[in-house]
Length: 125
Image (tube, rainbow, N blue to C red; front, side, top):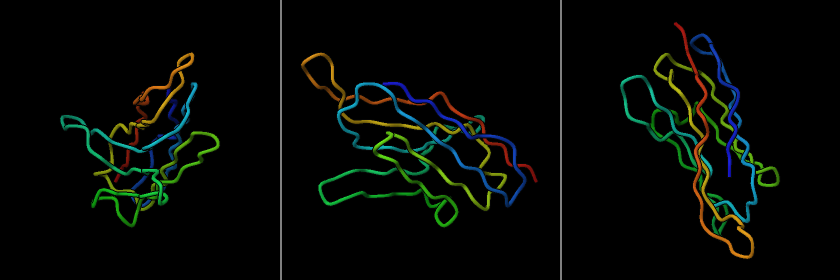
């Protein structure tokens, strides 16, 4: 399974960006789709995830982005989006998408997890 992320860029404080990440491969099902970010000199941090379960989707956000970022998914296209509004300089980072689930391998299925290549988001003051 491969992930292709896009949508990063340079924006001023208060602006908006929309990130997209498409998963390709012989995917049987997806359990978690999400976004993480890594600022220079810092570890990779959780941003938001969508977890699919029997009772529906569970969405989680980091406290630092609640009310400003919105994660959504298109299951038919195996794509996850991150709408980022009211951006702050502290949101500057490389954003990585993440997907895990099950994929088909000949006659068997097995779990997988994959990371996108990262897309730079820079918020200027």
